[in-house]
Amino acid sequence: MDPVDEVTADRTFTVPKGRAARLLPALFRAVGFTAEQVVATLGATDPVDLVSNTGTYALFTDHLSDQLCRTPAGLLTQLFVRNAPVPADDYRTVLPEELRRALYCSGIVTGTTDLVRGRFSVTPVASRYFLSDQLFAFDDAGDVELTDGVDVVLPPHASSMALLRYAAEAEPGGPLIDVGSGCGVLGVSLAARHRSLTALDVNPRAAHLSRVNAELNGVAARVLVEDVTTGGFAVPDGSLLLFNTPTTIRYADEGRPSAAMPPRRALESVVGLLPAGRGCHARLFLVVEVPRGGRSASDLVASWLTDVPVDRLDVREIRDSAAFVPAAMISQGRVDPQCPLLRHGGDAPLLARHLRDREIHEVVPVTVSVSR
Image (cartoon, rainbow, N blue to C red; front, side, top):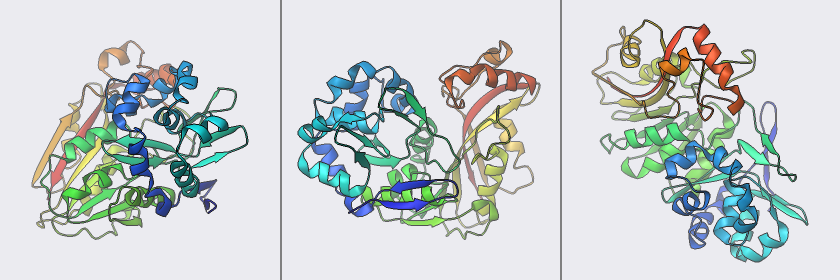
C-alpha cells in the first residue's frame, strides 16, 4: 500500500491511488470536513472567496493552529487547506481510524513520529472534493514555502468558479469536453448534466489527477493526455467544450518555462476544434489585456474571431473579479496585492510597471461562449 511515484520532466511527485481515495468523500463528510465548515473555520465570506484567497486565509489564521487540531474537520483543514503539519499524536487521537487508513492508502499524507503533513491540497467544492498540488506549504518552523513549476496542478480557484457558474447555464445533454482539465473540477462538477465526460490535458500529472478526482467523486470519465493546439482531437456532435485557459501575464522572468497560453491563441485553439454545423459550442475563461486607446475587452475578443465563421458569440466582462485591474490603478502604478495574476504578493509593483510600460489600459477577465 505504498504511494505510487510518477516522474515528470523535472520532478518526481507522489500521486494518490484512486481506489482508496474513493472512500474519502463519505469519510470527510462524516467528520464535517465540508466547504461550509472550512469557510466558517477560516473566516472566509463564502466558498468563492475562500478558493480565491486561500493563501491569505492560511497566513492569517496561524493563531488557530492549536485549536484546529482539536477536531477532525479542523485537523483536515490544517492538513489540506492551510497545508500545515499537525502533531502526530493529535492526528492519531483526533481522526477516526478508518479515515486515517484511507488517507494512508491513498498516499496523500506522510509523516514522522512527531508530525504528519499532507502531500496534496484537498478542496471541498459543493458536495465534492478535489485533490491538487499544494501551491504553498508551511514548514516545520512555520515558514511558508511556495511551489513552482510548469507541471504543478492548481487547486480550484476564482476562475474555476466563474466558469463553473457560466457553464451551468448551458443546455445539458450532449458530451462534455473539459479542455486543459487540471484537477478536473469543471468536468467532474458538471458531468451529471451531460451524456459523457472527456478530460484533456497536455500535462500528464494533471490528467492523472483529473482521473483520480473523477474516481474520488464517483464520476465516469475518459481522460487523455492531449495538446488541443495541434487540432488532432475529434469533437463529437453536440459537445460542450470548457476551457479555463492557463492565461497569465508574464511580467517577470520571461525566460522561465510556463504553461500559460496567450488568450487569443487559447480562444482560436478551442474554436478550431468545433466542427461547423454539428451543434457544438464552447465556453471559456480568459484574462484580456486591453491596450490603451483601444476597444473594450468584449470588442477585442470579438475581433480575434473576425476571420472565423461562428454562429453565436457572447462575451461577458467580469469586473468584480479579483483578477480585474482597472485603468485607474494602472495609471497610478498600483495593483492589488491579492490579485491572482501575481506570482507573489510583493510583485504588485512589478506587474503595475509592466502594464504601464506596455501601455495596457486595463486587464479584464471575461467568460466567452461561442458556437459554430
